[in-house]
Amino acid sequence: MSIKIRKASEADAKFLAQMILQSSRAEKKIGIFDFILDVDSDADILEKLAKLTVTKAKSYCHFSNFLIAEIDEKNVGTLCSYEPRIATKQSFVDALSEIECGDNIIEYESIHQECDFEQNNRTLIFDFMEEVNGFLDVGILKALMSKSLLTARLKGYTIAQSIVEIGSLEAMLLYKKLGFIQKKEKECELYREKFGRNGLALLEIEF
Image 1 (cartoon, rainbow, N blue to C red):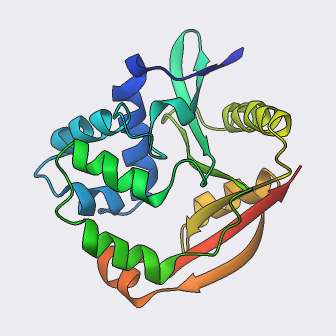
Image 2 (image 1 turned 180 degrees about the vertical axis):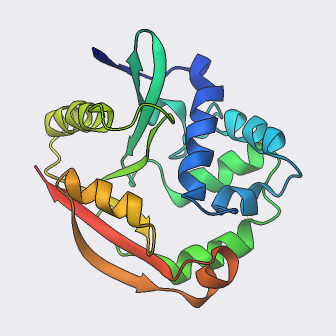
């Protein structure tokens, strides 16, 4: 099977929403976007997430940060890569305000502050590395990573990081297979209360 990697566009908003929700839940019933968006159904969450990918404020969820993998013209995977000096915490707050979902932002920021890592603004961040069910182990994520790292090198980056939940064994194994190593771990009581996971781990790859 031939894997095609392309940049996402506004037309991909619904697919990106599905991948963001899948990634954020990471085998849990409730993820960070269930908490932040606080709506009644998956359909409502997906609608809000789709809007979040096309806001004027370019948060890390903005479509312009995503690559999409295709097989036979079907979307089968995503990878988000963003620069924290551009896609800032404030841009995320602004994007949530645009879609009228800012009510839980103060509590979200409390969780984020407790679990946050000190990250270098010259480090690229990877997120939402996901495959559609049924397309596992065909090199999709490796292809997405290769394309993203090539672009990152052209921008002058040499290090990329990602944050994974402690206890998310599948995601941790996947990142390590792709060459990431764990650098730090932070247990957070507030995160455990909200999401049932002990906290977050910081992974890194040099290239």
